[in-house]
Length: 120
Image 1: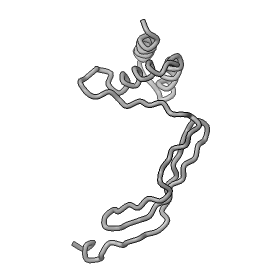
Image 2: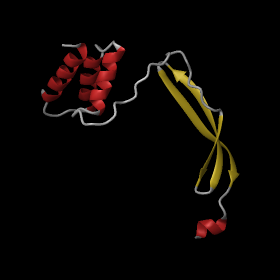
Image 3: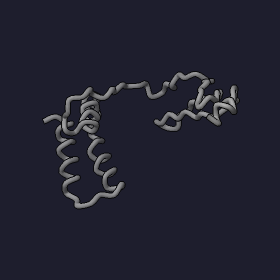
Image 4: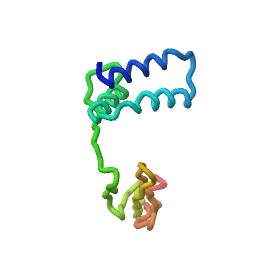
């Protein structure tokens, strides 16, 4: 039996062992058991099982390994249009521990929708 199979068995057993769950009890079960999944291939098996526990016919999830010290490369300025309004957004990437954040804020309104189009 692989580590993943043991982890899956333990998760299902722990979940069945309680009549009700809180967010804390669910998180405790998941974090306690998945801490043993140190192999990347077994982590991929775990995420495939979490996304598709009944093993239906559908594509497997995409799992990639990233260098934990590399920042995500994204465009600094992005232009989006919504309901006829064009806005320029500024994106800033930063890390806090193992989490990467992308802060997006509007910089300029480039084009307002026509008043006639709004009334129609």
